[in-house]
Amino acid sequence: MFTPKAHFSAKKFVAPILAAAVALSVGIAPAEASSSLSSFGGVKLPVPSASQPVAPAAAAQPIAPASNRIQSIINHTNSYRKAHGLRPVRSNGALNSLAQDWANQLVRADKLSHRPQHWNYYPANIPAGGENVLQAWSDYSDALLVKLWYESPDHRKIMLDPRAKTIGVGVAINSEGKLYAVQNYGR
Image 1 (tube, one colour):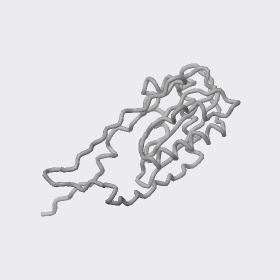
Image 2: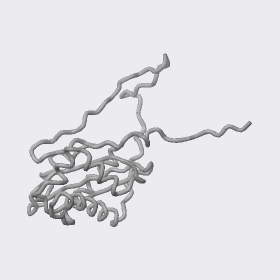
Image 3: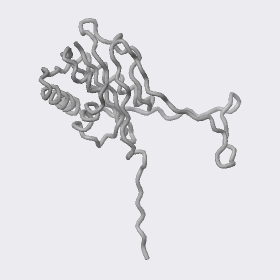
Image 4: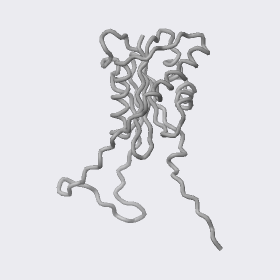
């Protein structure tokens, strides 16, 4: 008798990760777990040393999103702002470049974090606002990405900042479909 087998990737069903929001004066990165195990189940695992070279991992290259995805994220963000009686934020090319650069770096590192002191990277003519970052999957809709930010109190606070006037959005996706998204707000 034939028994079908289901194959799926458990990591895709794990809830997307949202980094703690960064206010202008605070830079908090999420805690990271690490392990230094050199054996597993009684089997000794090789531990790299100076005399034992380690092959470099293939560098992850971001897959550029379509520009309409960026605009869609901005539109969904503005829908939440409008629902709260706030004026819309306008797309800003310099902030889009800033956000895209960080999204690309997140894909290469394959690790979610805020850009350290992101406000130092803003153009001189744009007062810095907050930064939102998240890691999800490429098949998540733009509406869902924005909803994930909205449902996080710290991210929502940045999204609904009444002083925000401009926004930059960056999205990068790796070859496995892992998506990193960044919003940088200007005041």
